[in-house]
Amino acid sequence: ARPAAVGERLKLRIIEGDRRGLEEDIAEALEEMDPLTIINTHLLDGMKVVGELFGSGKMQLPFVLQSAETMKAAVALLEPHMERFEGSHKGTVVLATVKGDVHDIGKNLVDIILTNNGYKVVNLGIKQPLSAIVEAAREHDADAIGMSGLLVKSTIVMRENLEEMRRQGLRLPVLLGGAALTRAYVEEDCYRAYGEGPVAYARDAFDGLELMNRVVAGSFEAHVRERAEKARARGKPGRKPRTLEAEEITRRSALRPVDRETIRLRREELNREVAVPEPPFFGPRLIERVPVEALLPWLNEQMLYQFHWGYEKQGRRHEEFLAWARKALRPVLEELLEEDRKLGIFAPSAVYGYWKAAGEGNDLVLFDESGAREVARFRLPRQRRPGGLCIADFVRDIADPQRDVVALQLVTVGPRASEVARRWFAEDRYRDYVRLHGLSVELAEALAEYVHARIRAELGFGHLDAADRRKLLRQGYRGSRYSFGYPACPDLSAQVPLLELLGAERIGVRLSEEYQLDPEQSTSAIVIHHPQARYFNV
Picture 1 (tube, rainbow, N blue to C red):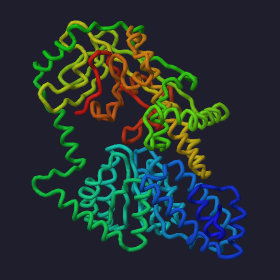
Picture 2: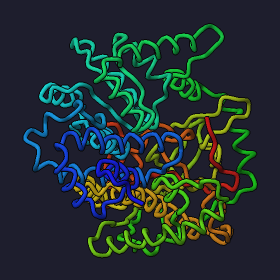
Picture 3: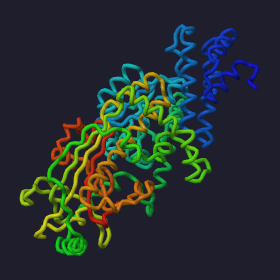
Picture 4: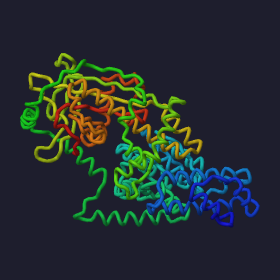
């Protein structure tokens, strides 16, 4: 039964994400109390419970978003009755994805949670230079700045931004978030870069909410100092700090000079019994507008539902979860695909091709069809152990009289997917926004699998693919596809020659200032045919 008191009913509506009858409850509440009391005493209490449930693992992300949509709808009903809505905010924060970074899903989730917990959020979007962030903070008299980014390069941009803010004499509270960040990096390196100023690590959206609550309560700087002291304790002699500088040193050492003769002999041994396949053509080819239906067999539904949409197994075994998802979530997927048929959201297309190739030390060298003229060279890291692997080991040595063959590929689902997702976000369709973004990412991955399967078939060993689709998506095939930004080929700038060779402009893909692919839902890869080629860390 619903609570008799209207305030408690509204709180419960927020917790349950129930919008049915919301207008009637808001109208009744307005007869008893003013709009700000409704928001601050009842609606925000509901969102606080939502945060606690999420933090304890008792509420999953989709239901958090449903609660946020209900909160947004309730506030929209109250706004006409509020004389000065601006003055009702707890505080103001400027959010931005840093310069060169095209990823915004994490930042937008923070926006959703902060907005629906009483904060004014100035969301600047993606690829924002520091000057724009600081200007917005001054214009809106912001209480804090939040900077986000996905890849390692973006974390370096964040640190450089903090150094520049310190030079400008700024000491505004800063929240940093993103997949490549570590707490140690923020609490040690970024803290020092900001002149031991107020900067903190936000693990997720609710972490960001807790930090903003500290900002407006005046306890943020004390919290930062306390975390910094703990970080110093972690860095005592005998304990190695986990900073991105240490990771960068490791990466550079992996590119150390090698004993070329030892590498040549190992490469010769690896490739002695492996015949070089004959590709159907050399150079790039275009695959225009792959039907979305053709990609569905390659769609990793487990990744889509769990990682992107935020549904957890909650004690179910793998098969039980997938059986539940087929009933509960597949219809949601079908609805999105129907939206695509109506709106033309996805435009899957690809370029791929074959080049003659050889290995020289740690370099993968590509040649034209003659095998004599070098057209590209990829410098790749080697594992730091005796006999450590490098991608270049899996092709014949440059001294071998026969050239090997390597494939390159680049795929995208097009720019409209991101445009529609941003529109849905602006329309407060939070669940649809997250679902569309996740489906876009996984369709790009499915397209990469689709093109890779074509390459294997054209090289004559597609029949070796695992019959079971789940095994196939876990590298159940001959050879390997190495995407840039991962340990075996971490240098994103190496995509420049790859995009040039493939003619990336034909499918509308380009690189950002920080060498990230744009549109966001795009992937590139080097494809190696060697039977022993597998993913490995460096």
